[in-house]
Each structure stands twice: as C-alpha cells, then as structure tokens.
Amino acid sequence: MAQRLTKQDAPPRPPLRIILVTFIGAFLGISLVALLETRYPSGWMLTIGSFGATAVLLYAIPGSALAQPRNLFGGHLVSAVAGIIVYHYITQELFPAAPLAVAIAIMLMQLTRTLHPPGGATALIAVIGPQSVHDLGWVYLVPVMAGVTLMFLTALVVHNINQKRSYPHYWW
Image 1 (cartoon, helix red, strand yellow):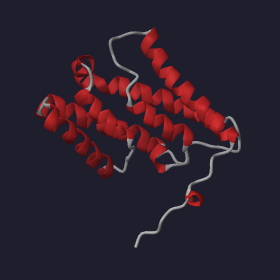
Image 2: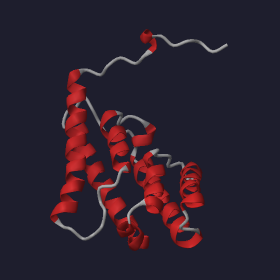
Image 3: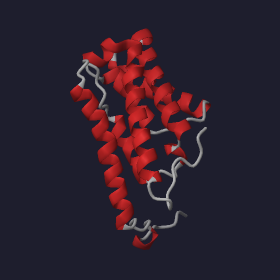
C-alpha cells in the first residue's frame, strides 16, 4: 500500500537569499533573450515558452542533472531537431505531428543522455509555433541555441558570484 504524504514530507522553503538569487537569475536570463528579440528584430521568435521551464531548472535548482550544460544544450538541440524533422519532413498535421515530435525528442534525449524536460516544449513549439517559426526551418536551431546560451551565461554569473555556490557541477 502506498504511503500517504503529509505536510511534513514537503521539501522546506529555500532561504530568502536563495529565492532572491533565483529571481535575479530568472529575470536577467529571460530579459537578455527578450531584449535580443526586441532590440534586433529579425522575425525570429527568440523568446520561446520552453525557456520559462529552463529558467526554473537553471536558476532554482542548478544542481539538478537536468540543469547541467550537457542536458541544457543537448536537450534543446536534439528536441529542436526532432520538431523540425517531424514538421518539415513527416507531417504538418497537428495530430500526429505534436505527439510524434515530443515522443521523438524524449527518446533522443534519453539515447544521448541529454534529458532536459523543457526540450519537449522546444520540439512542440517547432510543430505548433506560429508561421514565423515554421518559416525558419533548420534556422530554428539558431534562436533556440542563442537563447539557451544567453540563459546559460547568466546562470554562470549568478551562481558563481558567491563562492558558496557554483554552477555547473559538471560540464559534459
């Protein structure tokens, strides 16, 4: 029989100092991506929804295996590739394109040991995104990787200013 969880089983709230670092990291990381998109409009959608979930991992739980560089870069990369392939070479019909892109992305992340949950959304955006995303084709990889790089660099700065914290825990 499954054990019932109680309020005492919930993880403790992080110290306010950590919550503030998380806020600053998330605000700066997403700000850089959004500013790049607004200051240099190219028609490319740089601020994609999966970056919100990436911000949670990078800035709130930077010690997670899912937030390490291999998973961060590799997960978004293989997922974007999966989404592009499904939409441009298999089918553009919402069903089965949406579930197929996400399932293939998860499979590829598992095979390459780059599991990064927001990658599933990156694959899905390649399929359900606006026409401007579809028009990018393989160029979709550029804004995805540019955004990931900006958020990663922000995480490096935010988590390494204080010597009590460090990020990443491993590079590859």
